[in-house]
Image (cartoon, rainbow, N blue to C red):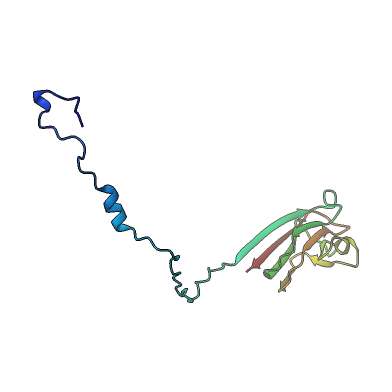
Length: 157
């Protein structure tokens, strides 16, 4: 092999590998066989994974009903299969609430709209419904002296 660097400053310059044994070294690391490798099977750890902590949720809300804006029932809570507790309270905003001030609530909009289908929620009263998972529809009563406020609290898993 001739070197293009022929000058006194490059006289002791060692370039390249004159004895290349890379192929022999690689061949010595690899053993050729005719059969495929034996599969190795290891047992999988059967210990159960930790289940994530599932926190409960508190859903709260309020709606002020009046007989002019709310002429059809309003759904305030959708169905929830994880609900474990529901509390609904009513409050008339009239200066002197009358016995006729109420709102109707039910699990269906048709029942809440019916005079006899829904439950009447009177001023200062409330209902606790444990393990109720259906929808909650509300509608103001037919004769109210002022707006009627409904508040609710629901707990889900």
